[in-house]
Length: 116
Image (cartoon, rainbow, N blue to C red; front, side):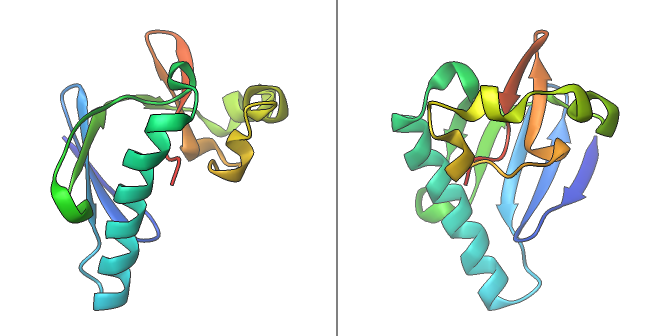
């Protein structure tokens, strides 16, 4: 099990799943975390699914999102990764930040893991 903190969410990784919760640092960050979870749910409906880490389950109001667990790209792997080719022409660059922990491997395939 591992726990990591993003800008507005906590991620708990257990076995082959990643669970995203809104941050409890403040009311504002909690709301930002809820919005991020909701955005990922909504974005998964129209962005190319083959490029996204799949959402397995979610709770209403952005209270929790469960995804497949991906192995996050290392800085070295990201430096060799062609972000522009991956994100365009699908407009993913509007949703996925250009940084290594926004991407990961699932079954030897790179996917976006944070697309809110």
